[in-house]
Figure 1 (tube, helix red, strand yellow):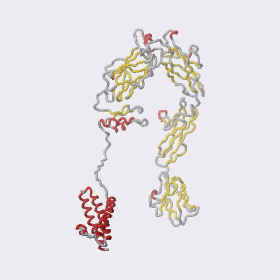
Figure 2: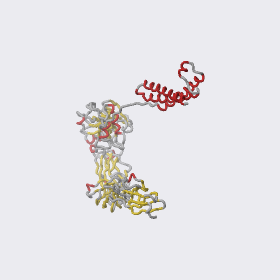
Figure 3: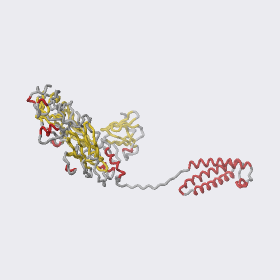
Figure 4: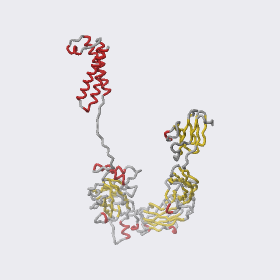
Length: 607
């Protein structure tokens, strides 16, 4: 038996050596394969030898096998042992084999450098994709070396775009089809201009005194200007095309008088109703168009058969007015010059009282920047807590013969809502506010009532009460208004001013003190309750204990439910000493090696 084992181990050692040499031949990067092969072939060889020697009754001479003189039994034992040994070796090799791949990684901590070159071009626009997070200078610049922010002073229009430092080309101007007024089209479009046409008329001329909206698109954010006359360059043009903001889309609305209405006022200066607007745009690198982009259209000169239209009023229709206000100024804006009257009853124009004749802009040259014409007066007879209705009618062409003028057959109804007093009914906080750190978070609050819409309004706060010092509260525009302040320990007085949409206002103030808790919680009572030890603290606390001593951190002790409660418990045993520490919401707790209380289980009394 000893000989059999010795022969088997010898055979296994031989196979292990062969396996290791094969692994080394694969190279140092595969040294794990050699080790795995050596172990696998060593174990497999040993098992193979044991089986072969056992089956042959004591031994198999390898030289006899090679020379062909071994018996049939020895030969069979050799092959059976070899097959089993190889299988075992294969299993062990698979289990032990690992592939190792070494790679050197160098980590360096350096300041962020934004991507450069045209590869970062698309990154810039990512800053503009979230309407809830307006783009900032920092966010824009971090996206690319050539990313630039335009309209930085406007949170609504701030825009990040790729600004090629070597670019010298001016913005490319094309028509904006999305904003063009209904039933209109662009014709004769080229790189130098276009014509605006009204599709409902054979001559294509737009209707007089009717708002016309049109626009252009630039291939990069740009400022655009417009003028009625030829100019030498961008800076010499007089008017902004819609706005002075750097945009891709530029929109303009115009409402022009008819040629006959202009000629009637200025017979020396004739007007044929044909207009050309000259446009230039400039990008953020001051690259501006040299050539003008022309926008051409004509205004129809057919007979005026439509009455004037009231486009807008100030105050707006449906607006509340201040409590006890008896009268208010009124501005009415029309699409053309006209005479207007108002009444408290719905009457025809001629039946309205001449005392309510409004003062109106009657010349076609008096249009405002929105291309509307204004009439003003004072509305009287306002009443509280009810709807106050006023009716307006107008007659156009103030300088024409009466039979040529057009008069409203339906009234424009304006309703102003009378209100009640607006009241502040509660303010806070009052008394003492407990703080749980060096700085306390204190919520100022105001509740309002009555006025317009059941107390809804806006509230402001101040520490002085001076009108110039009031700041809008963070959570307002309702009937409950809140503002959180971080305050140190002291006494405070805050002043509040609130108003509603009707202009009703009310004032109030509140005084309070902030106290910061710097005292440790005290265990006021400890008792046994069934199989539990219960402790009661004088304030909301977090507690834990150690059975060893008081030299432990509270977080390392055994927790005692409940956190932020005044009642805490732990399973009770007679032979345990409880070293207890408690911490309040301010973090006040015993110093190192001290406890809030030490309780011995055998001394505790039943509660």
